[in-house]
Amino acid sequence: MSNPFQEQLLKAGVVTKQQVQKARQNNKKPKQQHVKKKPVIDETKLKAQQAAEQKAERDRELNKKRQEQARQKAISVEINQLISNHLIKRGDDCEIVYNFEHANKVKRIYVNDELKQKIIKGSLGIARIEGRYELVPKAIAEKIQQRNEKRVVLFTEEENSIDKDDPYADYQIPDDLTW
Image 1 (cartoon, rainbow, N blue to C red):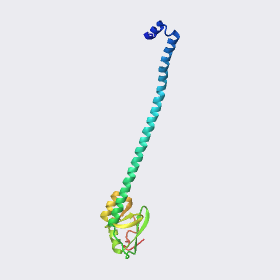
Image 2: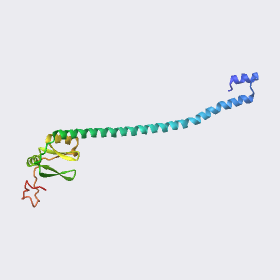
Image 3: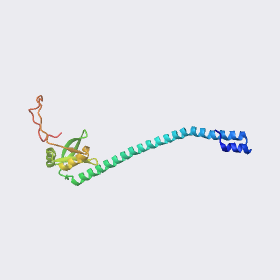
Image 4: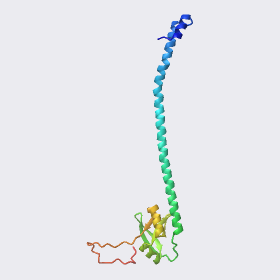
């Protein structure tokens, strides 16, 4: 299976047998070398592709986190606006300390007797804004609670369930008792 063109050049005396053999060997070598290089190129391409996929995944996760932070910030701004627009102003006559529990800690707010009764009845809620607590109507407190339940304290009228084994069941707790 020789090349007819090489045979014609050989018969014409333009080239020698050694030159023809050398040309055949040179034609075979690049094909063999090309085959050896191909897997290396594929391997590097594969690694580069995997690195690009990993980077894209990290970027997607970071983007999700940023979007979630932006959403939380927007909700926080909305809650602050609700509280500041609907807070119940307390005057200088608010000298009664009202203690309540928020985030497993006892907090206090100064109110007058009328506001205290409204809080106890459940018609007012206590909302946190910028580290302080303000009184808001129950409807606004419920809206705040839907957005972020950690920012509001709601009191509902609870039915006093009497435990049969309670030794102090016969004794009533006075309404004006402050703790």
